[in-house]
Image (cartoon, rainbow, N blue to C red; front, side, top):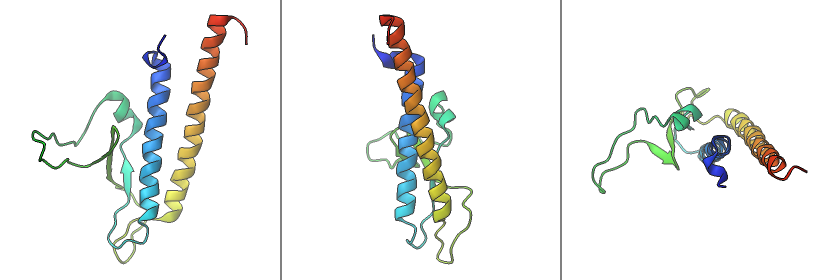
Length: 131
């Protein structure tokens, strides 16, 4: 039996992938905190990934076309529309905001991993009948 074909495991796996992409974007924001003119980026909501919608995306019809908007895996990356503030040099990365986001992402990833593990344990219990 393939676990990814079961909706619970597929959803937990997608959530963990989305959180990983989100963490990568936050890390890039933090790395560019002192870059003049750098605009903080954020990822598309998880619901957009699950629904399969790609609002605001540009379709490329030729290999030489430039992709519209950034992507990390299947996740759309856009400029953060609500940064806490911008510095005089135009940089919109606020380290406190990015730190809070990184902490939230870590907690959510841990929760998704625990749910995935518990689902696997329940499936094993149902099949084997013992722990």
